[in-house]
Length: 302
Image (tube, rainbow, N blue to C red; front, side, top):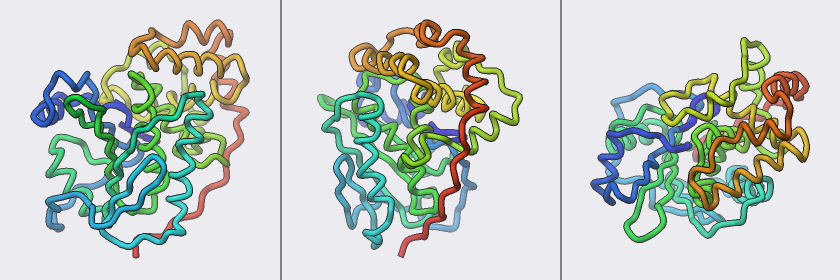
């Protein structure tokens, strides 16, 4: 899921949802992988809007790695399209992963109320989140990769976050929970921000913060991750991708292992070989990261 920023977004292990999805495709093809709620902000439930019986689909806009389904007119100059089109190349290039052929279905509701009503009716046991990535298994084929959200002011950030989850899901056998959320938090903001999440960075600097990657790597259920864990996951990813070739190689090699092995073991021992005293290195590094400028607000649907 995705708590403070933003797996399994990244995926959520809800036993009740497992039962729901098993009715659609059979438990044997779930492989323990379930939906990923977006991490950033919970949304208050509403009851006044009629429940949509189907997700958006009257119109569609095709991108390189996604199909965006919507029931309202969208301004084609919306930066949403430019960012979503460029994101896969950014993710695959920076992580040294080969491009995939998977297509992500993005269901974009016109209002928060319609989105919430549909998600409560379709996926009854999920907590309220601004966006969800859900991998629905198909018998004899690849998972259906779906993203649900609405056309709100956070749409670009939320869709970048959830699309990152989907891209990782399409390229790797498995993604450890902390790494899935850390990478989604890193890529949810545009390239010009160098992966810096200002909310995470500010909170970590204010402290108290004691890095503990060994503990983070043991987390298996998204319910175990709260805002501090999402912040720390983002921080470790940023350290490895932005402090030099040795730490970056550790992450790249680990991701390559995940392409064929769903359980390659913990990453921390490998990181210690490249970065002595990584916990102290992370604390020192965060003090040097430059805070990005805030983004401008986006407009709503027409």
